[in-house]
Amino acid sequence: MTAKGSGAVTDYHPALHVRNLRIGIRRRGGDVVLVDDVSFSVAPGERYGVVGESGSGKSMTLRAIAGLLPAGVEVLSGEVDYAGGDLLAMPPRQRRALMGPGIAMIFQEPLTALNPTARVGAQIAEGPREHLGLSRRQAALLAIDMMRRTGIPDPERRAQAFPHELSGGMRQRIMIALALSCSPKILLCDEPTTALDVTVADQVLKLLSELCDELGTALVFVTHDLAVVAQTCQRIGVMYAGRLIEKGSVSDVFAEPRHPYTLGLIESAPDFDRPERPLLPIPGTPPSPVDLPPGCAFGPRCGFVQDDCRAGRVELAGIAPGREAACLHPVEAHR
Amino acid sequence: MTEVLITETAVRAPQLTRRPFRLGRNRSRALRPWYRITTLMIGLTLVAFLVLVAVLAPVIATHDPIAQNLTAILQPPSAQHWLGTDKVGRDVFSRLVYGTRIDLRVGFLAVLIPFVVGSALGAVSGYFGGVIDAVIMRIVDVFFAFPFYVLVIALVYVLGSGERAIYLAIAAVSWVSYCRIVRAEVLVAKNQDYVVAARLGGLSHSRIIGGHILRNVIAQAVVYAMSDIVLDILAIVTLGYLGLGIQPPAPDWGGMIIDGQPFITTQWWLATVPGLAVVFTGLALSLTGDGLADLLAPERRK
Image 1 (cartoon, one colour):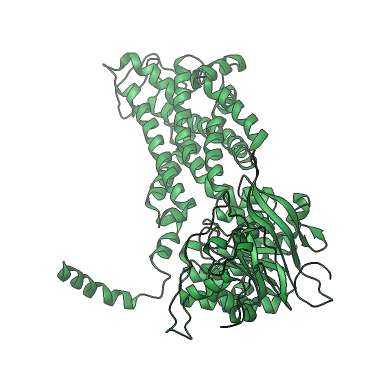
Image 2 (image 1 turned 30 degrees about the vertical axis):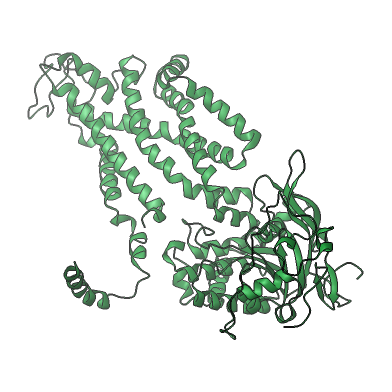
């Protein structure tokens, strides 16, 4: 592997490979670029976290993979390689056949992502009937089995319930059962625990990790919550202003953040192991995508900024085995 | 204030502990079986009564509805003629009973075709959008541009009067209402997360429309259909008034009202009784429609 990339393993066949993805809004007088040159890959069974603030482009990236970009927003260039083909280039019919058994998604708000007029068991069974060719009865049994595996008590009875009759945590378990019912290779998660209580969120995350391990499903996990990533994922990419600015294994990145922004994120979040540490907010606000500062987009907010940071675009570069950061003056391992 | 709260809690608490475990209040209401929805039950009972009358018309009627008896015209209600006789001596009660048959049949059939066609076109139009939507909606606009009755009368005139002409004329005009209703609902529903999720799940378009969208939006069309039946029965009455409706001597309520109109001051029941039948039918169908709306949309009853 010569590509700028991901992991040092040589016989590396990623389940999903996002290459140089650019997403934006086409306009006369220059496109507005929301996601710029994002590349990452996810190994089979791996759990990859994409972290960033609101507006950093993390959800857009995920939506582009799922083919769910909002109206007006389009992929400007780049590829999403899956199973030997480019998801973005294939015809809708072919792409649709991959969804469900290949790629599934869990949404942020499970109540709106479930059909309010259909019983949850039937909704879970729908995918397997369409994609795995199961009979109505087999699919119903599979649905109940999936519900049992997601820890829903008394699944035979709950399968007959409508979504609004279940609690938030229960609904998210239904979503998980639904998304995993065809044993997908890749599961996309868009902040799946944001709508849940912290204790319930914790259970749901554990469950998600366990089930993905069981089924060999790779996870792409988008969130703004560092604690969630630390708990769930193996590798992480940090996004800022539409670009990936740091990549690496979760343990490395959290122990030794190299990009000042990553450091800022970690220092602004509470650390329960060191409650005495003060929370340090990052000064300023993220830049608007129509008015990015020259050079490093984080420059105006960065405590380590130097003149050359403003000179030109700062590319991701390898700084250690399996580590990349887009910074000319990376934070030294002094913490 | 506090006292009230305390007493309420004190009264309720023992009940709650005795109740079997439930998933909260929503469940007991949403899973309330169809026969516990009061409006639906009353509506269905009334509709069932009407259907029964229509089916058993030959048994219930006391006379031949078209047999004239010129020696006993315009008689008041009596033991022999329960609702009296009309201007050619026909038994009003028997005509009313047989009229149920014709008016219900025409009403239902005149709604069925536009309901199916209009809903299907509306769903396709709203779901796919673009050129398909533009074409279908422009056709709908053309139909909407004409007043309902002008078009129906013109079509009945062309097709020749009679029951079948009435079905066709009404169907040709009223499908546009269903189309608009369903399209508007689909436009909202298709961007809901659960539809997006279904698309992401790789389901086919027909499955998404049929399995996810229509079942969430069809309630509106069903409720409209119930009142549409009443409107169609009124349309038949109106057509009858213009001599384009059910042809005499076949009994229908509209014809009876018109026949009774000249005698409204002397024999008021001639026009009033069939009028009440129309009102009764309207009530029955409206209640059924409301009840169905409740039944088909459990999430509305939070």
